[in-house]
Image (cartoon, rainbow, N blue to C red):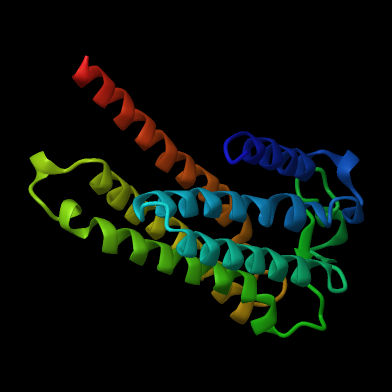
Length: 222
């Protein structure tokens, strides 16, 4: 789902930005938050949660805590985007340019009844999850990750790639949260697309790194 749904959803988003068949804006206004933003944030989260569950010896209490938090985060996202609804933002510039073939992108804004802090709560919860996930991974893998290089194994790979994932996803999410909190309406969601595009990519890197390690171990044992 993380690998193929993300490609499909992002492809539809790109096509919608360049084909006039997807205008007027109301036809696609709900697609970005509900078909792209929320699932392309949560799919990588579950991949990270499964990795943490594995390195903590399938700790059921930790798994339950992560599941409850991710369900709550999903609920907050749905609350933001459906209460009462998102609306479009008029791009700056003459109407003839805004409605042109190449500049008809529809930007979604949340309800004006929400404060900036409420509107950014989804991104804030995501940065909290990313930070806690990294802390849990490093706590469990610190000794192996910091040990001599010849003795580094699977856990050090999980730790190093987890750090890379954190730097990518945390930096984009915190930038998105700050933009929602501080930027003007026509700019505050400019970090949305880079964030939701990079998160599945980084999660796929985590998965492929484990697969490569498994292949190398199988070759070495044979």
